[in-house]
Structure formats: structure tokens, C-alpha cells
Image (cartoon, rainbow, N blue to C red; front, top):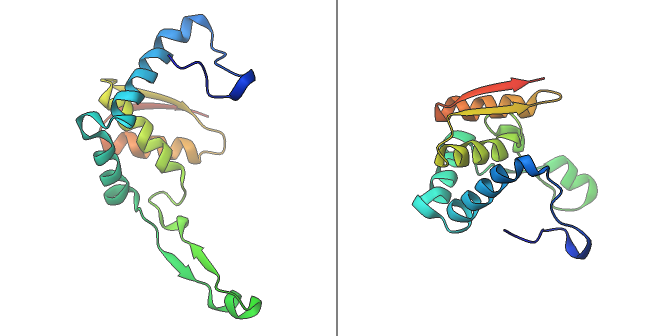
Length: 133
């Protein structure tokens, strides 16, 4: 297991009872994300493109460009499936859980966008989910 990712003074602060799950997740991350085992990253990129709407287009903002005498472009993240960037993270996490053999996702949400993105990813990947507000 990694010594931590927070510099000289940091590390992991996780209750001991959760450490087996953290170790399982870290192992899966290394296998599937870092090493692209079983083509995980290829599938993730494909799903981001075909389901999520990536990459989003750049739009030249003519009026702002003229007003500020500069080339102003807007990255149209609002065109992503679900209307926000939240699906990027949720889709990756749910796909990783699927590769790990998990069959249910539990998530929480505040304003609702994260919960919506998790529910969309779960529906897309046919995994049960429970979202708490």
C-alpha cells in the first residue's frame, strides 16, 4: 500500500475497520486504471464518448472576443449527458466497481447533481444504486 499522497506530513486517516475495503480499492485502481488491465481505460474512454458526450466542443464567443480584443472560447461542459461534469467521476467509479465485481452502489448527494450522475452511470451499466440526500 502507498505511504500516502499528501507530502511529508500526510498519509491515510481511515478507521481500521475500513482498511480491507481501502486496500481492495487501491489494488483494483492499480490493476484497472494504472495498468489498464482488461482494457478498463479503453472502455472508460469509449463510454465517456458514447454515453457521456465527451469531448465537449469549444465555442468561440464572438461578442466577448470583440469586446476584449481577444480570442475567447467557451468549453461547453453544459452539453455533457446530465448537464454537468459530475458524470465523468461517477461513470469511472461505477465502472471500476463493476470491474471489481460489485453489484450495488451506495452514494450520497447534497444538491443532487452527484446523485443524479451516479444514478445515470448505474442505469447505464445496469448496476443497482441507492442514493441518499
